[in-house]
Image (cartoon, rainbow, N blue to C red; front, top):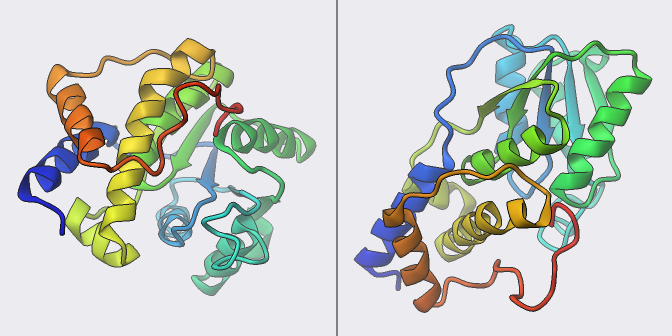
Length: 224
């Protein structure tokens, strides 16, 4: 049972993670691999809206996605986008990345190999990963403009769509920890975190929403 306080605290973190960027056309849309096939849906929809002429789906598998997406996150995303009417010629695959740092670096390489001219990136992720992903791209790909997008759902609706509210809150908490820690590790730009968000994060940790936290005594691999 998730308490009313925990829901309220998770909502504070959820709202903070969203970048609230105004959508505009970009050189390429990058769909970051994960357990959430909704990322592919949003990316396909943005393509059909004319927001990007080219898509890169990036991601191998993780413990969370191995059973759900056995052919790899990028491959499953591509299959979904094709079902939604995106032409194969508009999709590039990056099937090796196992973390966000690799998503970014390997995507840059795929685009360079395709001789794609990139000045702006429409970065599509899970809603609670917008801010962390943005901060990482700004660190390692500073020459491009970044516009964030994600599934347009509220937190509780999103948790219902995933089918595991506790896992979603754990992930929201883990994403906030990375926003705090990654700049110190040279993996992301620094961002202001309001005191109310920090307090909510601490309460959620005390309540045990910690399965996605990095160990305090082990430095994470880049982009973990």
